[in-house]
Length: 108
Image (tube, rainbow, N blue to C red; front, side):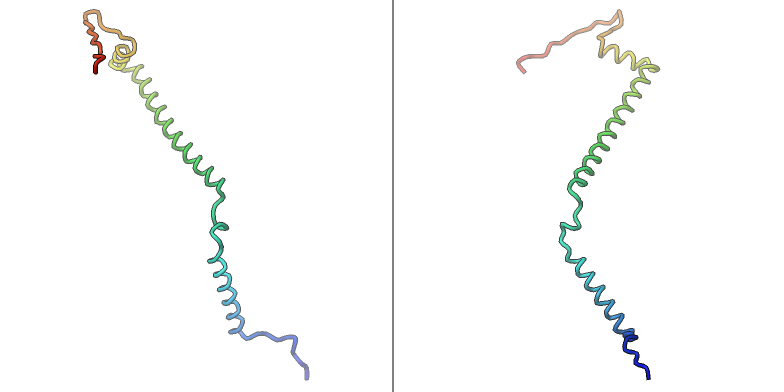
């Protein structure tokens, strides 16, 4: 009779119990990993903050550019806007208007 000593196969229950035990050990090791190993790189966090800051700045600049574009278009087409700008920036008035300048009270 032939001996089958080197062809031994573990029972299915023992194989699955071993696999479960190994999976449990891996899960426990993952659970107890120090927080430093899972933390993001500080340089990446800093760069991420800079990206958000630059995106906010870009949004503000885009809003400012849109306001300036609307103002330019108004100065090209709207007579009221042209008149307002001439009065405010250049001090222009119609010939029949009277301009009164009031000095600020220095005591206040």
